[in-house]
Image 1 (cartoon, rainbow, N blue to C red):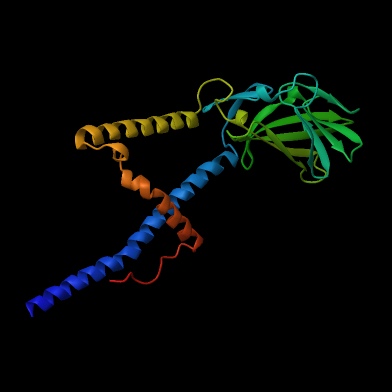
Image 2: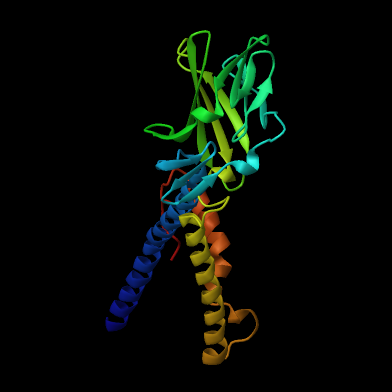
Length: 270
């Protein structure tokens, strides 16, 4: 009887341990899922509006609490626009930061020019009118104005920070129709605070700290494994078993997300 009871208890323990495995795997997959979300958000951060105040220091430079934004590396200085004939809203737009340019018969010494229907050119911004504004929706952008034929036209260039992009301009065009307000978006590493000079941005400081901690973790961990535990070869790598299994955890996490974040049903065999 006592032997049967012990066997029964052992069987129950094994069953409980095995039944807990799906739950533990679910928790682990959830953790990996959160890591994937965090990385995705971090990657997408560069594509979101910059909500910061930046005091004008020149037609293409401003000072913010996070560092200096300087678009000078993107500027042409030969009287031509850096970004030319960018389509948007049925028209095309040209823009050059910092320095004025001439284009067509209607745009002389401008910062931005609209070409309407492939025939008429209209100035939609002058360099001397440039101001940096923090729009509630579009975030940081440069605002220009130009007046011709008693009509004032305005252009807005949204500044999107993306360390992986040299410089790319897209145009939305006039919005709303008939408003004489024209919208463009610059995506560039030079739209990031601290890139073109004036100190290191907060993001750069965080990256430096992160990689410094990684180096310390690896070196200190290898020293402990070698001199403290006598490890050799690949076993010198701190938490080797974890890093070895990480690709499989990522795979399980992706499968968990693709499967609708639902735990696997059923129990493992006893």
